[in-house]
Length: 278
Image 1: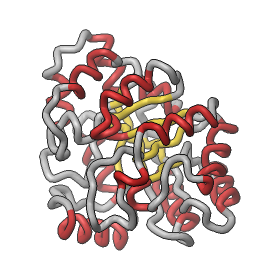
Image 2: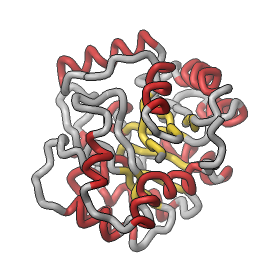
Image 3: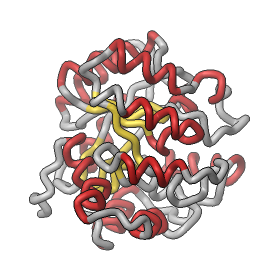
Image 4: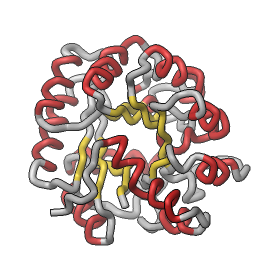
């Protein structure tokens, strides 16, 4: 089992993020430091963790990448992705240094960073990932929406922008969290046309995000278990850490499909060797 969506931040930044959540979103149940986040999941049967980090403003990324690379250097059961603030000075060098330090892709958060997926400032990011065959995890769905973000997610996020990125960068491997949030059906259709697109389940199958109960999320997982990844958003969740996994287990997927969703697809996307557990 691979958790393909786990957040790690330095202590002070984690604390600031949790204060933001307290005021604008939901209460964080697991207020653990980064090392404890990793240990918590691995001690409970997760075989591998994909660690995500993102810069909230220009000038942070290089230090965050260095901190994360050092944290996971001796943790072979963690695959960590880099961050860069879109359009910041030296963005290409920041990514080059991060990849050289062992980080294995890039996380972009359109809501927090105030940027659309097809914004020209991200061209460098998409090129850098595509050239190395490294994935990009991009929160490009419109939900969850908050007036506390520096942008209106509904104004800059939609499936059409993601499709434009996939069309303009055909070698880019792209993962959209939260099953695309409130455009689940449209993202499901996009999977049929783009082999380099993946979606993760984070918080949607846990029935927490403010989405209408259409059942389309379950239909999509059952129809495309070859391109769906299990993810949690841990530790930034208000409910029990295993709520998502229990919901997936209740779907009644065939064994092969269940294995793909819980780990096989993430292993392919992120280049993870599931036999390496030490």
